Image 1 (cartoon, rainbow, N blue to C red):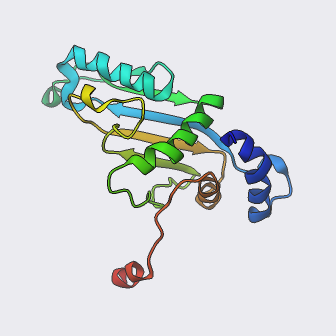
Image 2: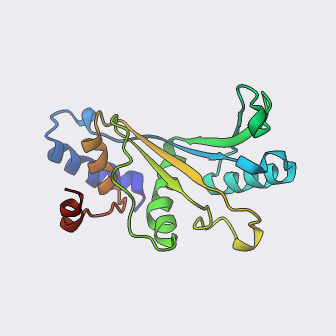
Length: 188
């Protein structure tokens, strides 16, 4: 079953009951997914910029937008207007397909995966996930990777707070880490 259809038929009614909402329109849903990558040390390599844009296009199914430097910083060898990264904003059908792929295929393929942190909410119902490498994506072949770099994924929801967003993402299948009682005692 497609994730968006599952959300409408199963998840939204459960979420409405769990949050005690009277209006169906108040039930939190996904708003957009933003993927961002900074190029770091590879700024001077034009070939690598093209390769990264191609990889980003294959991962998201959408052409990335260049992020440009707003001002020059001599210490980092950055000039104003220089490409310093790429970003993609996914909405609608592509967003739902990406979230389904992220939860069912990509995260289970991450090496030594034990769940994602539940502490990465921003206080307004949005969740940020950082990945050290983009190899778990099925569109990327390991033999084509010359340099590894990270990837940031921001999942924006319509939830007004983190509790609603956490319940939404949990019901969508996000594998959050379970906090152990031992961890809480050792922190106290």
